[in-house]
Image (cartoon, rainbow, N blue to C red; front, side, top):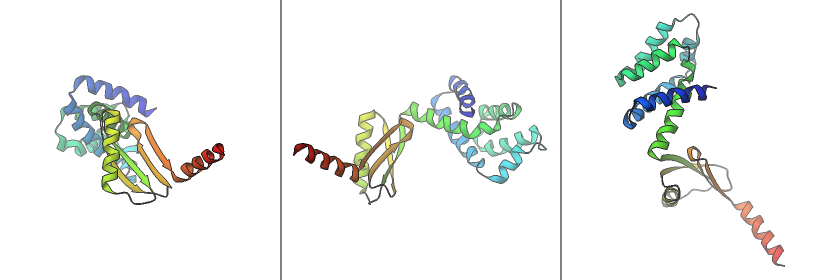
Length: 177
């Protein structure tokens, strides 16, 4: 539900802002969304005894370094409509929209064995060409028996499982006999 509401705000922001402004807003709202992971911060924001004006002051103080009137207006509107809880969804939606606009995506490579940086770079450049985008990949050592590449924002998941390849080889040999 929050994502749907956030999409409406993002659509309105896109209509009134250029790409650079949207990127700047994405950075600010991503940093603000991190505050929502703090339990003490959430106690203050969710507390019914804290007035809307006090909530607005807290949130505006957090985004003051951005010096953006549009960000301040959006924060005031969210507080006025009791929609401060959508700020994390708003930040995520803005991040995805900015990635789609700039065609820049981040992905993860999982494997149980260490991969050379050149292999990861080759995977990244190959996927970038395939999807006509700029894709950067990070390596995470995992217990996955093979290699798994996941670019969530593009909806791409590629995996090469050693056990699956072994099973396919065995099936192929059996069929050949």
